[in-house]
Amino acid sequence: MKKIEALGVLIIIGLIYLLVHIDNSFSVSTYEINSNGEYSVPQSTYVRTTSFYCKSFLDKTKNESRVYRSTTELIEMPNYAKNYLFIVKNVDSKKQTGDCEIYQYQEPELTMTCISTHLNTNDTTKCDLYVNTSNYGVDSIYFVKKNNDLKIIDFDSTNFNMNEYNNEYTFIPKTILNNSTKFLVGTITLTNTSISDGKTNTLTFENILVKDSLTAFKVKDITHTFKEDVGNGYDVNETTTIRIDQSPKTDIEYTSKNKNKTSKEQVRNVIILFFVVVITSINLGFIIVFFYKTKNKNNSN
Image 1: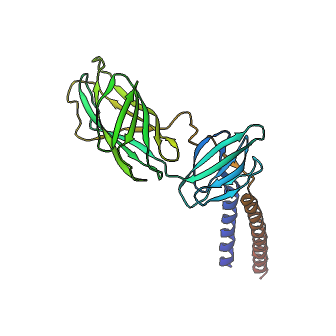
Image 2 (image 1 turned 90 degrees about the horizontal axis):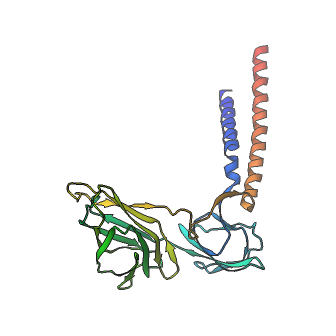
Image 3 (image 1 turned 120 degrees about the vertical axis):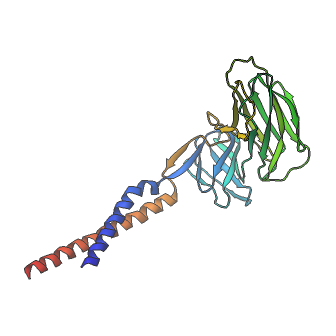
């Protein structure tokens, strides 16, 4: 008798769990795209083109092609890689169609580490720039420097040459660099030309583009704040800069994330859950009837 009651309690708990999580089972994360561009999309998610459909869709990694005939169709990303680059081009505004391609893509990254959090007027300090190349290598690095008071007066590197024009910096590899590898771009020397006022000075690199043989990928901004005060201008430990998200989102990142209920997989989940709930309810009814029948029988005795 106790075993049956325990089973009934477990079934009730399972039913409650299904009801609580039923909405999550019916929905998927969908990345909505409404224009030409290049979008970073993670594995096992969906893409929906809102203002056009992909008359041709090509998975460059597996050399597979498909055709989508409606903007309501969901394009499922594969799961054999962590991230993909979803490229939309040649959109025909009259026919509302476009060419779509995906590539297995490991995003590049640019980081900076400085030896100081202090930089007094007319003092200098050094910072190291590092790049993590994508799986398509690296052809160049570009960014815009904000803050005219903090100037780059020297660049030392065995891997890259640096070109500068009006606070725009471009770094070109001296030789072919390996894919998916971290390299020291070089060491920059900074000087503080601002008036000594005790205020902090923030260095920002923005509009950072890491170009490879496939695309020019926009990565997160880099910012580093230097204090201006009396005392030692150098710290013992190295200080890593803060990398901040782009705002607003750029074309190279997804534009929105919504729940969509139109995929065949979701319909299948609805049917499965429906039968699970029905069967569970029937079993629960039998257990309740059996419980009361047994209870009444014991009371009559």
